[in-house]
Length: 477
Ligand SMILES: *Cc1c(COP(=O)(O)O)cnc(C)c1O
Image (cartoon, rainbow, N blue to C red; front, top):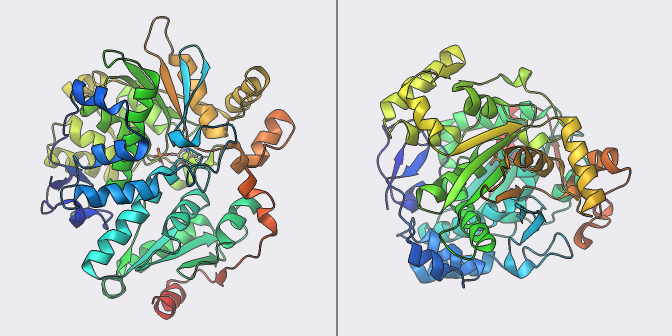
């Protein structure tokens, strides 16, 4: 399998050639040259597989430069009941991603029982194993530099902690994360994890990452890498749970299922698109947004209008406060028939006019025929869903998942395919909103009780790229 860039001006590379990189050198995102197919027989055969074995079957269709038996070792180390048994005590963690029916025709795929209680662990833990494997093979060291407002940083740190050949330098805004998030990251004692607490905002942290990465000499000399949501391997790892969820919800491969996905950067739902393109019998992919509804606007009108950071609302489902969905370019590349020149043209329109509009074009018909639906949710909606599910089913969901359930219910039709909503985090991560909804704190999984009292370690630094570079230089081993 080879990988191409959505902007069409980067060389084709094998999997290991793109694993450690973010953007392609031409500014595009990598995609496989084609989507390998899953036959009906194969799908039926997969029903009996455990999660790790299923992961190997899916991954090997896209990875031919790691031997299948080596891939199997990496998957079996990653997808264990121990790693994914940190969440709800009543969940069957041997399933890794257990499916729970909430009401007739609506299921919840639990993706948040990993070490940081968010679905990002599903892919990030595998990325950690893949990175370590790749670096060992080429004998190199990687210094991962990132910025976080909470969720992504902790998932990355828990995936990379203690790994050979990898250091993590994670910038976070000093004093602007919740006590829980801070404790999650700053209590890690591993020698390869460095938390740099910057005296600024999350945007300041991101700017510093950009500035440091723009110093190409420094970047090359220290082998600076990232683990952001545009990494293809993250998307690929996420394809597996769509297959697993489909199999858990059906008894025969003639049945169809829809998925509803709380979305921000379009990474999670794009993995569903890949699964659908591979032939998984998916009826609809439903994109759920919060008040920052750029994607809902596109799928209901044909107009994709990004917003600057200043117009992005701060909401109670903060991991979806995104108004420029980085993985959306991958979907558009497929919709325009993989015409990279066309993608360049559309993104030129975004850069110059902040939007593109497919209304009334043949492409809009293709979007409408592609099986996507969408909806959005507000603060009041998510509080209502959390309160009501807790009262009726005794199930507590997090604010992002509540956005998904709200939209899934709107989209459900009598006699239609069942909808599986993806659970993107556990309520324990968002105590304030849960208290606002139900008047009490969410239960904490055992591993997180008293986490705020553990010793913490971080490096306070000014908002200054030179200071950050100096720190990396002094600590990269
Ligand atoms: C990252 C995240 C999302 C958004 O996922 P995308 O892949 O960016 O669409 C939704 N919910 C939670 C809790 C997240 O951490």
